[in-house]
Length: 131
Image 1 (cartoon, rainbow, N blue to C red):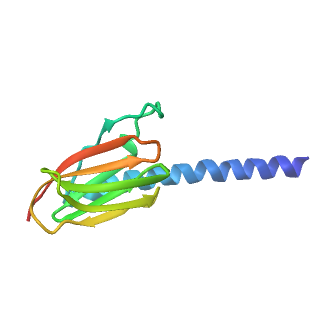
Image 2: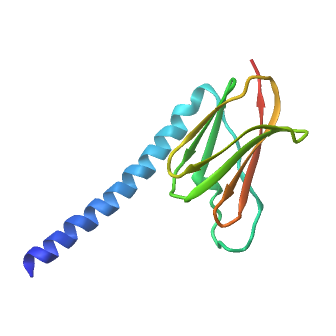
Image 3: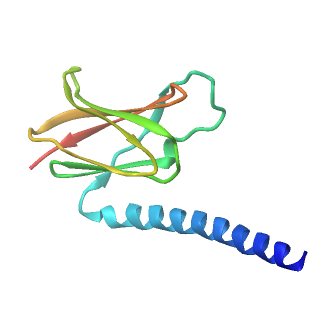
């Protein structure tokens, strides 16, 4: 009985500690983006399937022509799309989170990045690519 309780306590500690490390990693990634700037993300389309706003779990940074995205939570399968401000698709991909993404955007201009979560919610933000 004592060994079972000890095992449960150790597993619980590992579970909590791994979550804390994930959060610390996200904060570190946020602070390391000083060369570029963070892209503001907002909920733009809600299906009502989720009650919590996940915009804080999606952290994109633009640094010249490179858009890097850090997912601070496991959001499941996420579809990411980059379009010009006029709607022309530049790049489209999907990823299982909490893995990150990186996009190279060859041309200067104004763009929109959108993230569609598996529950149908869409989060978007606008950014500008400059030399």
